[in-house]
Amino acid sequence: MAVDVVVSREAGDWAENAEWLCERAALSALSVTYDEDEGPAELSVVLADDALVHRLNREYRGKDKPTNVLSFALTEAEEPELGEDAPVMLGDVILAWETVAREAAEQGKTPSDHMTHLVVHGVLHLLGYDHETDDEAEEMEQLETDVLATLGIADPYAATRSPPGEANLDEQPPDR
Image (cartoon, rainbow, N blue to C red):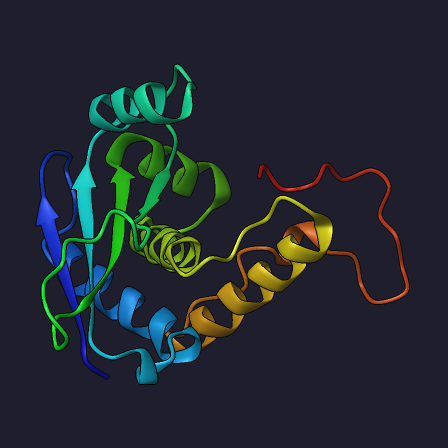
């Protein structure tokens, strides 16, 4: 696959192997969703902290709080004219260390597994997947689960899903 994943560490107490884990997660997500016929591509993953993500979330989404992951997909209109063989610029995935670490602890996951899930989630957003409707959420969550399984990571949505044919009216839906 001709995809370049650039990972940068801007802030936060990320694990030593965080860059490698992010690249592996992004490439795994792309391997099941990106059409190689579109040519080479590039995306970036930024390992940041809550302060940076809070600022970006407020500035670009109008939400005055940090969040675990932000995805900024580049549209064709934003892409610079680089020539025929230049990679497609997919966009940026930005993670907030404190929120990722807190959520991992609350959910009984390792920070590395949670970070990997969020990178997969963010890359799927770059490729046009969303979770605005129940059907979209179901499709995106299944893709995430499938990709994470290839990496040996458990289904992050298992606790919020009811067994087939059984509705669980007591559980709250996952935060979308």
